[in-house]
Image 1 (cartoon, one colour):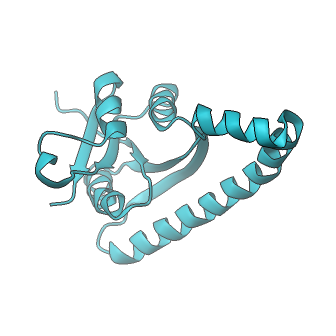
Image 2 (cartoon, helix red, strand yellow):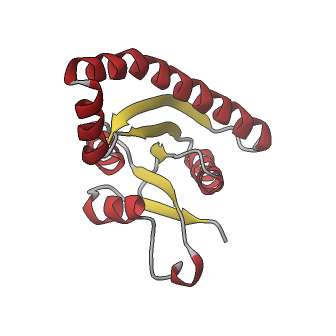
Length: 161
């Protein structure tokens, strides 16, 4: 039995590679009449940085600053993703794919991608990967590598040629 791909989770960091990977997600969605969910994760600060800022500013002040800026950052990223989807829709006029949802989360990229792919009935996860220099063939980006290793869903990793 050939699986039908109706729900695609497209994880993006809005890089050039991610834009290239979107073409694959759109092509697959078009072929199967599927829907694309655009997913972006705003990475948490590393523990060391978080601890330093807590020490410098004080716990209450740092928590207040994070809370004040969190909503604004999420709204800015959601707006950037909407613009990204609009731009891609103009570039791919022959491909009438449908972006079903745009989701912006904050946390660890790998954990958030895995949680989202499990919690919703996606048929495929599509994401870009960075290949760097002579190690490009041996190494995948750490996020994409960890998602591939741990995902229970099929994952399509796209690299810029």
